[in-house]
Image 1 (cartoon, rainbow, N blue to C red):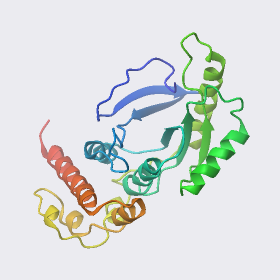
Image 2: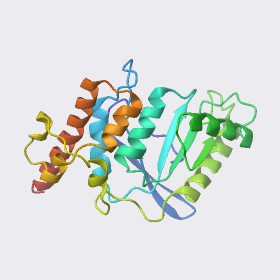
Image 3: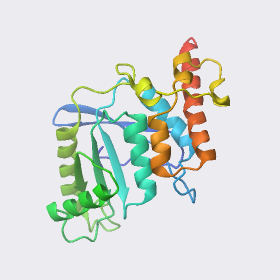
Length: 241
């Protein structure tokens, strides 16, 4: 919808990127892996967490997060929000929420947006802006007009919302913000991970674990996943081209 052309939709945990322009401003958008798959409930799929962490660390900068959701807000949605906003992006990147699946809504204007904002606020989710869209044309193009108007509104919102100065993990104290207290479990003893990284795990990750009610075995898995991703990232950077 944003790109303006049909794109392939897959079910893998790998991310894909697409190029597009809005009023002569060039953008690259990444379609990322879904965090909750199947019946896993509030526990993220660790492969997806690994891929997302690696993507954020490798990008030269991030200017905007587009949080897409369909239907009612769930604990999964809240958990994913916290992971994206606080853990992966240190609350440094503006977020807009885009609600789809509204083909049969009579009013997609300010009243509906305010309803969504209130519902998000109740879950502690505070996006910069909210847009309600019709993301499908319909089998017989019966939603074409709503689709086209939604596309225009969404593109306008993206252009208004993105940060002109991209945030990057390499230009901030991101590692220190995420890992501030000592962490001394078996997961620390991984080769090729920076000493400051493994010696200062805690705070934001622990806050995420507490807020989402994650079980102990899952919290250990989350920390291990992030540490392994950092290790693999460092190893890959050392390899010659």
